[in-house]
Each structure stands twice: as C-alpha cells, then as structure tokens.
Image 1 (cartoon, rainbow, N blue to C red):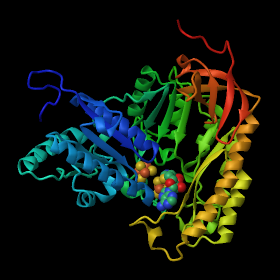
Image 2 (image 1 turned 180 degrees about the horizontal axis):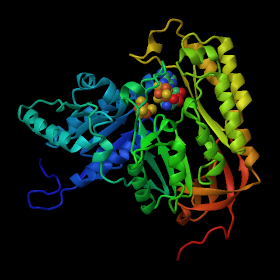
Image 3 (image 1 turned 135 degrees about the vertical axis):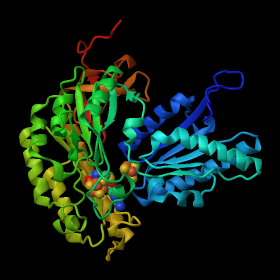
Image 4 (image 1 turned 180 degrees about the vertical axis):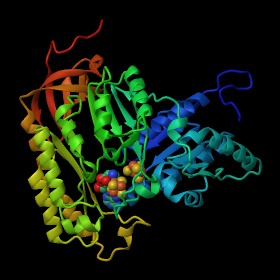
Amino acid sequence: MKDVRTGSEGQCQRKRVFIRTYGCQMNVYDSDRMADVLRPLGYALADTPEQADLVVLNTCHIREHASEKVYSELGRLRDTKAERRAEGRDLTIAVAGCVAQAEGEEIVKRQPAVDIVVGPQAYHRLPELLAEAERKSSILRAGKRLPGAGVLDTEFPAESKFDHLPSPQGVRAGSAFLSIQEGCDKFCTFCVVPYTRGVEYSRPVSAVLAEAKQLVTAGAIELTLLGQNVNAYHGEAADGSTWSLARLIRELAEIEGVARLRYTTSHPRDMDDDLIRAHGEVPQLMPYLHLPVQSGSDRILEAMNRRHGRDLFLDIVDRLRSARPDLALSSDFIVGFPGESDADFDDTMHLIDQVGFTSAFSFKYSRRPGTPGAALPDQVPESVKAARLAALQALLGRQAREFNVSKAGTTVPVLFAETGRKPGQIIGKTPWLQSVYAEGNSRLIGRIVDVRLTEGHANSLAGEIVTGSYEVAA
Ligand code: SAH
Ligand code: SF4
Ligand code: F3S
C-alpha cells in the first residue's frame, strides 16, 4: 500500500478529509472513528469540502428525505471533482453509512463519480479501500475517463470492526459518545435499521470499560452510551457471564472522573427492572431518558410490530418516575403510519397529554422500500400527515416550554459545551438535557458549574453562573 504520509522528498504530505455526518448519534460516533482510521494515513480534518482531498458522506437511510439529500450532495461533489480534474488534481468521494449499506452498487450507478462505497461494518477497511480506489483512479485517468473508482465494501465481516479501529479521540468539551451496541433484531415494520446495521451485537464488557477509561483520560466527564437498542445490551464479561446495561452503568459509574452518564436509544421492551432501579440508585445516571413510543394507539403499535401496547409504556413511565421522580422523558413519534385513523391519532395525543414529555422528535411516516410497512394498504395522504404532525408538535412544544419555565428560579449543575453567538456567552446542558445560555468565561467549557436559571423559553433557558461554584485553574 502506498504511504501517503511522505512525498517524493520524504516530506510530510498533508492530505485533508472532510466528513459530513447525517442521521443519528451512531453516525456521529462512526465519523469520529473514521477520522481516527484516516489520521495515521496523513489525513487531517478539513472544515469544508473545497479544502479536502477526500470527502466522506456518512449517510442516513431512515427516511426518504434523508437519503435523497445524499444524492444532491453527490451531484455537487461530482462538479467539484470535474473542476479539480481539469486542473490536474483529484477529489476522492466516499459514501459511508446506512445509504451505502442499503443501496451499495446502486449509488455508483446513480452517481458514477463515487470512488468508494463503504458500509458501517467495514470502516476499519478504509485504508485498503482508499488504496484500491487510488489504483483504479490512476488507470481511469490514464484512459481519460472521468468517473470515480467505484470500490465497494458492504460486507458484514466476521471480525468486529471495533477490534480493528484505533483508540477513540472524540472527546468534545468534556463529553464523549461510546458505542456499546449495534444493530437491531426487532424489525419494526416501518424501519430500515435492521437491514442497514444488521443483527444486534453487544461489545464485550472489557472493551467498553477500556474505551470508557481512555475517554476519561482524554478529558471526558460525561459519557453517552450509544446503540440502536442500547438497553438490549448483553455484553460478555471476562468471567463468561453476560452483563445487562444496568450492570454496565453501575460499573462505569465507579470510574473516577465520570460525572454524568446517559444512554440512547432505548426500546420500551428492554426497560428491565434493574435498569429502572439504576435510575434511582446511580447518581451519575442523568434524570433524562429518551424512550421512543412512536404511537399511543394499540392497533398501530401492533401494526408497527413494536411488541408492546400503550399500557406497558405507561406502566414503565410510572415505575421510572417512582424510581426517579424528577426524570425528564423524551420520545419519538411517527404520524400517518398506514391505517392510522383519526381515533388512533387521538390516542397518541392523549398519551402525550398523560405522560408529559420534555422534548421529542416527531416525523411523518416515510415509506421505505423493502420494509413491510411500505407494502401495507391504507397509506395516509400527505396532507393528513402534515396536519397531524403540526398538531402533535404544537402539543409537544407546549410541554417543552412548560418544563423549561418550571425550572426557572432553581439552581442546577450545567456542563458547558460551547461558546454562544453573543460575545461572552457560553452554552451548556442541565441534567435534563436542556440548553442553558449564560455569560461566562470560555475556560468553563468542558466543566460542570452551578447556574441559577432565570428564564425558561421554548427551546432553552437563560441563567447566571453562581460565582464560587467553580475554580478556574491558574
Ligand atoms: N431504535 C429506536 C429508533 C431508531 S430510528 C427505537 O426503536 O425507537 C429513530 C426514529 O426514526 C424512530 O424512533 C422513528 O420515530 C423514526 N423513524 C424510523 N423509521 C421511520 C420511517 N420509515 N418514517 C418516519 N420515521 C421513522
Ligand atoms: Fe428500528 Fe424498531 Fe429496531 Fe428501533 S427497534 S431500530 S425502530 S427496527
Ligand atoms: Fe440513520 Fe442509520 Fe442512524 S439509517 S438513524 S444513520 S442507524
């Protein structure tokens, strides 16, 4: 394989990669890991595609809109590539993520300028794929042809990519994602994830603990455990036993320096008693849970193959709130699933009223090729979906605002994450994942500081830092 680190005079030949991330937090984590794989090959991160020698689109297939965006971006990149080639340079275009996995070769057929298509399970093979793309490209260039190399890897290799990726470097302002589980065996009838991410897989306990310790050493004080079904975690421990997510959380809380733990995304079916108890017993486990319910109608939940009814969800919420009374709940909703009647939609609105969510993601049902939902009769008209979504978002918006307003006047620990647009402003998160804007020194970024919340708004709160609640190192 060609070593791109050294030029002909043995000097460091810096290359630049631009990675654009679509979709969920798993993709954010994966993008960091791709950057980690590319770094030893001499690739530094670029801020724009224009500065880059290699552009990676880490794609999402969850809704039609998400995957179509990729093709318009690829059209723009093809033009950049053509301009570069006219100047005697090149631009390597790679498509990674869930569209890569789902559409594979189709991508190269639709956009021949693509050089590499790599599925989420094959990122550790990027160096080989790049070398092969380079070989093929030089042959194509010699033949004066313009298309990309079209190198493909969408296998689910027997070896785990996690065993072959370098140590993570993705700590941002004291926070880090840690992927502990991938894939899904649940096959909800609307969803592509079981097809794009494959069967459920839990990383071994020792690998997770080792990575957590590395992240803490690198400055993380908040760890967010990730998985498509993170609470289905069942990792093998060194003694051969199987650990649940609750057990893992208790162990992670023992690591010195871990101040905050979160996990996402969970499925109601996997909220076991021990995990519910952990919410009341582990102080580092933040009082916030994203627990997608999708619908409040038993009939629709059944058609979605969610494998639980509305009562089970309400029961889990009650038990969680008994364990942790100040727990903030967030969820995902789909409106307009095939066959959803006005009465079904009312059930969803009623459930939202009953539970009270502090934030939520809500979507119009998107028909995904290859999923059972796509073939169902009684697809709901677009205008009905739009009206239901607007009503649902208005209700959820009111609940979010009420929750924010209810916290005004209290003093809470905030983990500051970034500077705001106004000079001297910094932005952080409360334990309930609300955004807080305060005036403060940017040296507080990455630290937890007490903030007196002064005003609650629709999507955020304003606050004042409580002096004396922190010490700034000299
Ligand atoms: N594993 C999680 C969800 C992962 S996908 C769970 O089981 O809840 C994230 C969200 O995207 C889903 O919760 C759902 O609300 C939404 N989603 C998935 N497929 C969709 C589709 N075909 N149309 C609209 N929204 C969809
Ligand atoms: Fe998709 Fe359902 Fe699996 Fe969640 S549980 S990833 S919605 S199939
Ligand atoms: Fe999208 Fe794949 Fe995540 S489809 S939501 S990027 S698992």
